[in-house]
Length: 370
Image (cartoon, rainbow, N blue to C red; front, side):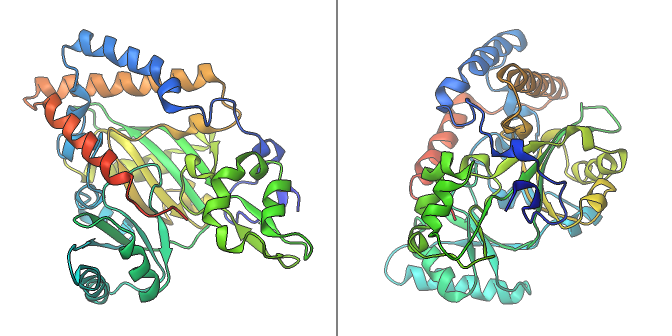
């Protein structure tokens, strides 16, 4: 099936350029981000504060830079905007003898009490870049997920917004400004291959113009059915988590930002006390409605650690990507400095390193992302 006919219902149509992968998109992070780290060092000297980024959103743990709880961040959304958050519960993975079933039983009770229903999205409470995200379709899936989750850590069970449309909306408001702005809109497309009744899933992946270049990303998560012949006309979704590092296609949607969309996300952002910069990830079924500021659900909010993810559009040049990140980090330090003048104090560097190491340690033990 040609790329332009791929079933991304409710989204702008993809053209053939979506088959491409930029040369830096999957480059080692320590290489790609080195120039940005140097720039942040200069900003630290300029503003006299190496951890000023943790002052950008004073109401969030570490301003949402690292090690923050998804539950804690989403809990800050208040008023009418609360209805836009996809409902969820938080579950502790108990350790020791009987710990697994205790976690499963408490999860089932929380699901019942909050009137949630399967399928649900399971994901770590602390984590980023789509790590450890799976769909759980019943208690058996839930138990399997919990069994592979590290004891002593929390995970989220969130209502599945079963729509093809997903976007990352990056928002900035300077302290004292009455209204913020959207500086980045990333449209996310979940790649698929289409059966012909002859080839296995492995062959379909390898033969696909884009998926074949990223086969190492898709093969592990589809291990159980790689050698199955896919029926003619059957569509197999290769990625669920809306992260480019997990194989999702990102497209720059900055030219499709509207005033109505900006108003809607400004209302959400301003419902969170002392929130000035970050990315809101949403799902929707109708792009026109989304542009008009309604018909979407918030699935996650990332603070200072969020990124203007339109840079991972394969058409973006390296210079354009760095310009966007320089603008973003410049805003983080500028807002952090402004909040310091207002009396807020940034996180001490020792506490920040501890949070970063804690998140890094947990990430190694999370379940595989589906």
